[in-house]
Image 1 (cartoon, rainbow, N blue to C red):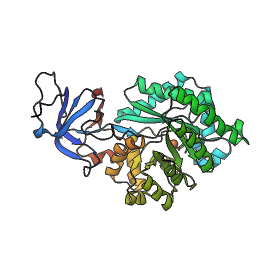
Image 2 (cartoon, rainbow, N blue to C red):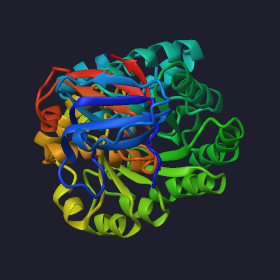
Image 3 (cartoon, protein in one colour):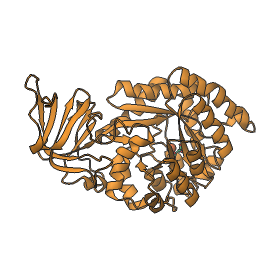
Length: 412
Ligand code: NIG
Ligand code: FE
């Protein structure tokens, strides 16, 4: 006979959307309850099936008062750490300049590079903390942060240190990606291979040595790096033990999705111009498609990623903010879910899966986060809503009333 379960926190009196892989829909459990022991979920189900706990434990019971619990949200693609802003370029775009023209004339990512090189680690942490607070207030408990605005070793590492500090100073789990291959920095004009060598021979080894990076990323595009150049960086990252990500097929189809799939990358991101072959390669390799509706919207792109093809091929679709000052100055994951539905054709259920289980998968964290299942971390978001589809519906309204990180309430 199994002994009574042991838990020290119980959430009851509301509804649970587990978003578990096998569960249909949102994994809805009306009149559901969830119990945690320490950092982990030990029980989730209908409240009336709740077994009596071992009576020797001090049990903290949270009454949900009819609210909904979902997994803590996962923002799997952000450039949260940067200095300055690009509102001047925003005005230029409104007068007719394009993102690519601004980039080719030395602005864009290079504008943010100049500001970021001037910023101290303290400055970077301070700026990113504000944006992180905005994401946390909407239930985000896990996020990825990239470097990529230094394009010189010191600044790239400083950005990653700032990102790591966000994970220790705040109640969120932060995963980091080294994006040295964002664009070519001006001092390497005409010496592309020398810059790629710097990434491979200096940035990657130092980032790994200091344990500052979990993954390596690159921007595969006409205004950035070729597939062969990206491959050389990703292979160096892989040899150093890093996971792989790729900014792929955003402004032009460079075969980025196929490259990411062939190299075993965890995800290919953006994908506005991915070909049917790219979709098939991702499906075969199990690569997660990270959709970034904020960038699609902010750049007024008219060519959405091939969502119906991803859906039909069974490619897991994640959704993320891409929070950055140039193409997606959006620190609202709920707004991005709404844009994903209206502009990319996701269902509200796909949007929520995109910021929970599939977001966690893009980070290689699908085993411990992203759904409410026994054995996973008790990362929870609590919502004042009548149905989980509302998370993609309201605009400018934040129904998040509580956040729990690894069993500990951090916002209530
Ligand atoms: O994910 N596509 C490339 N990189 C970023 C944009 C960065 C910027 O413009 O500052 C992105 O959209
Ligand atoms: Fe990005």
